[in-house]
Length: 177
Image (cartoon, rainbow, N blue to C red; front, side, top):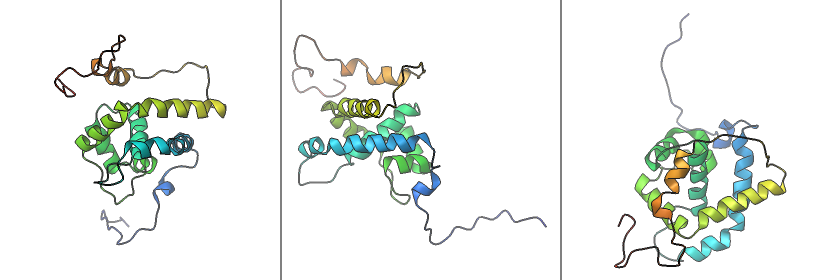
């Protein structure tokens, strides 16, 4: 007998996001390293954020989302937010509950720029590499990456003058001045 092509959603679900991630998936060990690095950086995050006001995106979630963007060569924040909307693996890695809304791409970019402007991303990546080396997870073996995303992130806007002159132009120039 032929089955019916009908989808009936459950009213309640008791599955956790971690249930959808295979036990041997490489992102599990990367998430452990990232979480340890982020715990070590908690004091820095506390110093960067005010005690009052509107809550922003958690810096830990921002950093994990940026890792995904690098690992999977996601070319824009808009596409990253789309992936976070429906990809359960990505939601689990970043720490977004299954019923939690995903951020607007412009809000993500603004929060990301704030952290990157304070050298948080470079410190985070350095800490993850340090932890990976300490655990013997690094290799001198060859691997390939799509460098276009890295080049875009290292664009002219991120250059700093070697002579010590201010990064921003006089008159309070903005990001695209």
